[in-house]
View 1 (tube, rainbow, N blue to C red):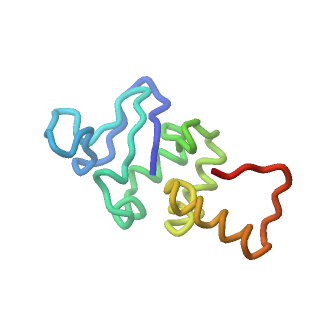
View 2: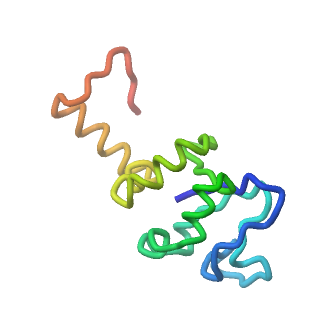
Length: 118
């Protein structure tokens, strides 16, 4: 799960969120203004699901999701958050997304015209 702080203030999540998991830092636990952070590097899916701070951040617009390198709008971030952990994997894990796409095309659930998949 990749988020960006949209505010001009630090956004505290918890001490398990680390900028670099190999190097403790005074800013561990906060997402700095404008910073993009992959929470999956330092939190389990269960921790992300149960985090009141992440939920508050998403619903307030202080945090938005980054999907395929682009920040999505607050309403879309809420939609993604509410979809739950099984959907998060398909959105944020490229291998899962590609596997689902290939499976959908192979089974005929998805039809793509003039589409090159590499």
